[in-house]
Length: 275
Image (cartoon, rainbow, N blue to C red; front, top):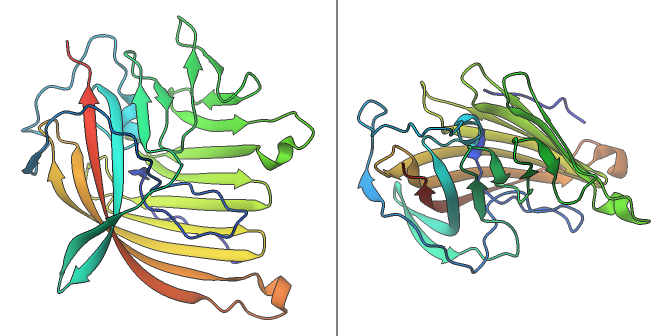
């Protein structure tokens, strides 16, 4: 397979765009359920870092929030993803994307992530030490800087290899996620992010991976259109160029990659801890 490349999350980090995969590929991003959440009001303005209110909160470590593209004492992030149509040079919101996956990330009052944007849970003891994830066998490793480097879910049941998976994360000097790798049963996907200036949210994202015999590549560009008073984005446009093909080892030649363009709009509603 062609060498996986790195451009300097999101992610959103996000987290936030679903990739069409084969039946053996789990949806990792942009997955929405029908539950609603109480939220804070957002504004249709862009907030410069110097204009944002103080994000200090006694006892709150912002490292995990920064790693996932957020600023301030974040408590909860509820995301919603919509398909969009390109009209001229503007996107128009279309149908909401529904799925049975994760759409909420949460942080405790110490700032430690308790559920990330991939649906992985984190449980800590009273001293902030990680004690379990999806089960007691799950392992989580942090760097000397306190950033999450690995989340490894293990399943020791007879058919548990189908459910086991690992996330490996990398960061820059500012603590922003620059890439992560998802490894599951017969699948591996690599994501990388590029930032503009000192923004904690990415301006672009690259994905390359393989699930069984299927090959995938995504080039994603983000345009941010709304921010809240804290300086976190609450709406962004997502422009995606996707390639999908078959491993040449399967068909005996170079992969023929089908190219598609899709557009999405992602919104976030964010709750904060208050002093």
